[in-house]
Image (cartoon, rainbow, N blue to C red; front, side):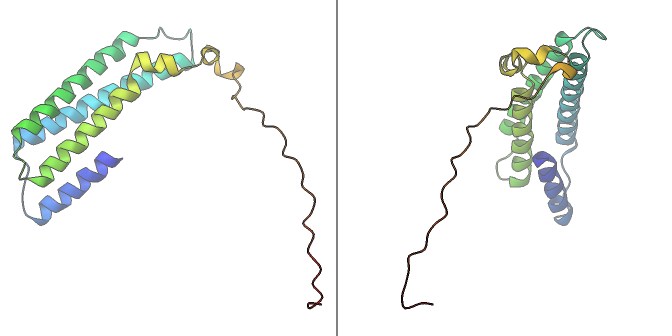
Length: 154
């Protein structure tokens, strides 16, 4: 959401200033968006396959390929940061926003990290899983507060 908010703000500002983004730069942004979409789509497929085990073979390799593509997108963003003149703050902000989004996707979609975070019992079918709710001890009940007697008040 943050990246799209930045994209919208930069587009409005460029329109207000009657500027356009260089076609090569627009092409790079389009390619990065495509790579992010591929990674998310493949991750969604993996989650669906895990939610319905046995119906499909889980294709982690497919997601690994998408993650490699996201790493390429990250490298492309690094290159844009080097090539883009720092004086153009709008484009610099847009590149930084794309970079932060790709970094977040890489963290969220990391299969090894995901496997470490995933508890063992979550490998059960969804209908057999229960949410883990810690049982808290009951709070002691306190006696009501007594008010001191004040002879000057009735």
